[in-house]
Length: 191
Image (cartoon, rainbow, N blue to C red; front, side):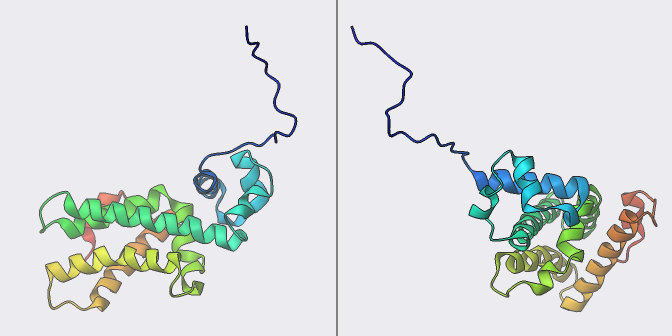
């Protein structure tokens, strides 16, 4: 009869495979940004939050800036999905208003991530061919497309003005200057 033992071969390494460590780290970074803002996020705090060795984040991110760019990229991708979903959930006539609500809701529910995406200087400083720059540019496209659909003669400047209105409302609401409900804000916008 063969005996089963728990002993490992003498040359076996004791390693722990975390699975999708990059996703775990990004999720932990998103949670840290949501809870405390991006300014307090460090590679060491990320490792602690993810429950991994302090060197583990460096396997996926070269430094804090690289990590923050990845978090912002993920944020822009989620933001774009929210806008596209809102645009497709009804008729074309009210699509721009639905997108405006989705924009404001995203900003209100993700204040610190929104600040990282739009107010941190990461995007303007990103390389033109970077994932961050592409994700940021892609996030503007649904609004531009919807403005052009509602008014074929509208220029990109018209979409920028609408974007500026929405951005201003998100920031003013986040900073406590506006207390009105989101629906009321969208109702008075000149979309």
